[in-house]
Length: 324
Image (cartoon, rainbow, N blue to C red; front, side):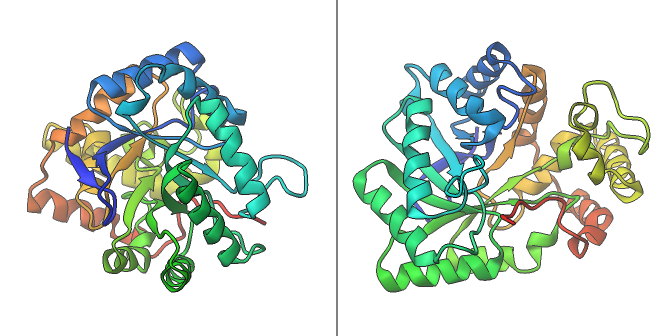
């Protein structure tokens, strides 16, 4: 396994990380535990979850599965998206974040979070309040590093400026939808991250499975695919994304790679990317995606992938999650 610094921090994370959105939802407890243990045994040390994944079941499963192995992982979780119906069950206020951090610690059966991330920008809470709260969490020892997710470049820059001015702990990373099917971060976010030393953690690296080549038409989805298990996913399926998936599959076959592995390998080589989080509902999926770590794309293959995905640099983001 290859390890990289997360942004300009001293924290080393595996080039491939494990996303656990499916734990407790599309993967039951036993399956999720096997996936997590396989990841650790394969050298993956970056485990990413959130307080809302599968109604908090993801955190509970991880907490139990990490028994005796907590010190071997860089454990990342998030808060800030809608947790419940109450007026203070969302956003990045001191009230909500402190409550959610304590709840996450209890579910994860740990007394510290390695990377605590704000799940999305909160336009209703002053950034100073959020950043001071995060700084206090780091000072308390409950949190070691902080990161952002679903922030626009200008929002991140504003946050870093406030932290610099106030002497607060700075964001070292940001999560964003980024893949061959969504290159919109390259317009502003990537240049910002390179300038400010912020590590990018792409989510949806396979565009929800579209880049695996499994989808051949809008109307026919493979059994057990995300389009079947999560009907909301169908909004991402259109002629452009399906054609991209087929083109990636064709190029991958020409070089004896799987389309998933070549898509992840391309993403790992992008500037500012520190670790790529991939989800899994079966151990076999993770085993296949781990092959991406050993792929070293030559300039010609990279150029071809750049060319077939170029239209997705200026299209709408594949996914973005915001408070409304």
